[in-house]
Length: 307
Image (cartoon, rainbow, N blue to C red; front, side, top):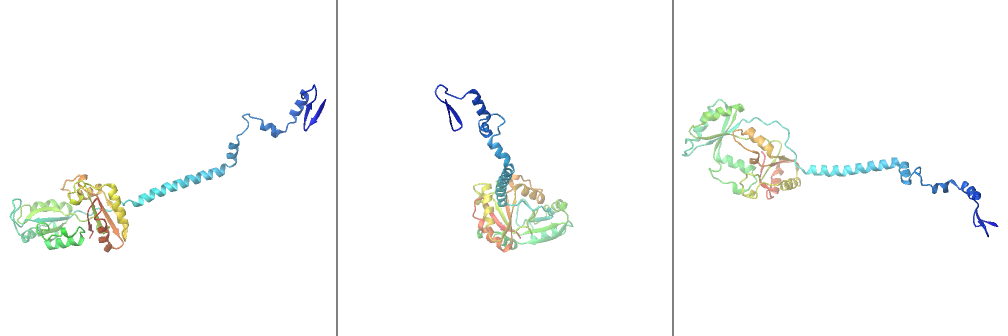
């Protein structure tokens, strides 16, 4: 005996189940969706892969956006860091090395022939290779130093030994220096003849900050050469000052290049040259205050105005 419960036929009495024919027939008519749910073959595509395929464009846009944002973050940090660093020296041609200075021998000295300022000046003026020589007195040198230096009154000493009278001149050609030096050697009143370094930065910067170097003997540099961290701190302090437009770094390599250009007779190595910072302001009158703001910082030897 059989009875039907829902869609299933349940055997009663001795017939406890479906016949093979009925079982096969019911399997044949099983809905496709249910059959698919029971299928685990390789032809079944995983749901995540299906979703990715359906949203491929949206995912591509999201990934590209993430990459761009990450790049902007890294690039922004890099640009910010670079903006805090000092600029390299301007790409300008070096002016010709035509300036020279004559130190005088006005007292009895075993290394030179004693003479007068007038004698030495007459010898210098008589050399055809020299243009417009002038005598710069002790008082004038002292005034020039006081006008440009920010080091303090202790260095403004009224002593001839510290600020002796000299003769400054210009060569008609750079190669004339050897001729002038040879003609003045041993003349009364002439102690030494050397090239005089004009400031490459005149007209480009208003303030010069000398950093402690390896061979600096200044008492404020007793801890040795300044570090990169100290230099960066000085640059940051300068940027905070009113009117500062640009901060340049004259590194040791560029400083050595200038030294060899203006004073090729002096043998220097890169360790003999300190780093310097040069600052351009919107108003040169603000340079003194900017320089005084960094004078007391670690790694700073001195500061002066560029004139």
